[in-house]
Structures are given as C-alpha cells and as structure tokens.
Image (cartoon, rainbow, N blue to C red; front, side, top):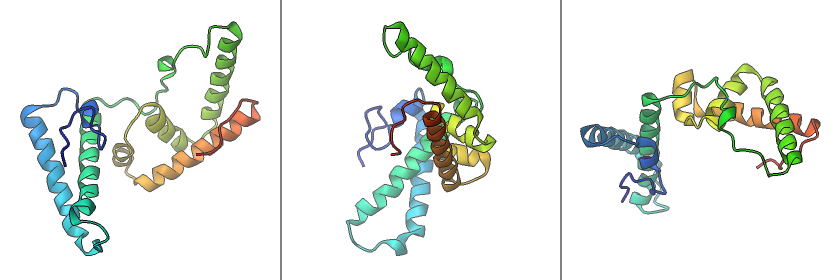
Length: 176
C-alpha cells in the first residue's frame, strides 16, 4: 500500500486525524484495521470478477477500513458536540468594504434561519458532517443508523437550505 500514516497520504489522510497517536496504540489500530479488512475481503471474495488485479480490488477494502478506523479513533478521543454550530470559526468578512461585511452578515442570518427550519435529524446530521467534520461512519454508529440514511438526511438538508437561501434572495450555487 505504501501509506505511512502521514498527513500527506492521498488515500486516507491518516496523519491529520491521528495527531499524537503513535507506538503501541498506533500498532494496535493498524492491526485492527488490517484484521477488519481481511475479514471483509474474505467475505466478499465471491464478488471478485477479475476485472482488475486482485490487489487493486482488495486495496479498496483496506483503504476503507483504515480510514474508517482512524476516523472513529480520532473522534472517540475528542468528539465535538453534533448539536453546536461553529459560527465563531467561520472566516471573516468577504472583503474590506462595509457593504461586504453587511452582505455576509445577512447571508449568515438567512443561513441560520434556514438551518433552524430543518427537521431535527437533518439539522443534527448537517451540523455534525458539514460544519464539525464528523466522519459519516462515526455519526452513523453514534446515531444507530447507516451511512445511506445519513446521506439522504444530508441531501434533503442541503436541498432545503438551497431553496431557503434562494427564497431569501441570496445567490445559490447549483446542486453538485
């Protein structure tokens, strides 16, 4: 694989999430991820159709297991509250002109109202995933649901926010 766990790893970005984890704790985490990946590969062996090299096919399971394990570990150590909005961590005004600052304040007020109009579950998922960078797998485990249900909540929340912002007269980028 070649992943050294450094912050430059394009596959998993493990170094950014692990921070100060090293030594036996890091070895244990790596062993757990490898074991889980091997179990998944063995369970899915009948799905391998030979359209690529076996190692290429198996690598996707390893990358998923490592990234999920690292994310869960990092969020167990210091999980932010999924309910709190991090408005104070947003960047400063759009420009140096007073009208830019007023425009940004109006947009943030409209966004805050729009977030308040979401269902409780949509708001919880949006704040956790989009604002507080909680990994979707970690949130799914915490809420006792699955990734797909959370993706649907997130999709519906974003669609509702776009509609609310457009109705309030603020420019909205097209759905991506």
